[in-house]
Image 1 (spheres, one colour):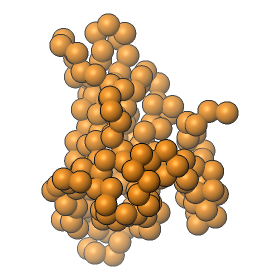
Image 2 (image 1 turned 120 degrees about the horizontal axis):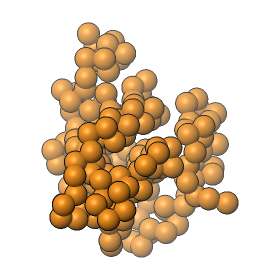
Image 3 (image 1 turned 135 degrees about the vertical axis):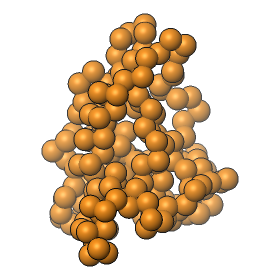
Image 4 (image 1 turned 135 degrees about the horizontal axis):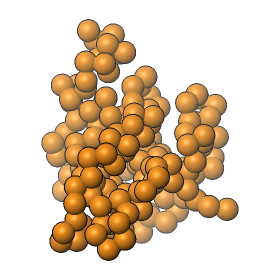
Length: 173
């Protein structure tokens, strides 16, 4: 069985979220090298959540790589399908995505991306689920070979980062 999360497995109800947690929720915690609890601040050092860093990135932007705006738009479309389980807003409009860098690898001609993002709180209990859903975007996007996630907490997220669409959905406009 593949560990990739399929599009139809993205939780959209409390029941689906509970099922997702039962299926995927403990995997990252079990493989955590420092054995810190999922929502522990001790695992967050220097503004970067080290639980989500691998010793080596899957994607590497080689010299001669060409920026791919069309692929970036596809990634944005997928990010807009991932909702913060505690809020009625997708993570893109919520302002959790700080940067999306997509390029075409000149050797393979396949797309690669790096997404720099944050969470609403460094102690977000759904952090692993949200990051896993972002990492699963290549399984739902044609021509995307890999996607790395860089999770940062500096600058911290604030409500000012939300789009007008998100503010409207949350009754803030």
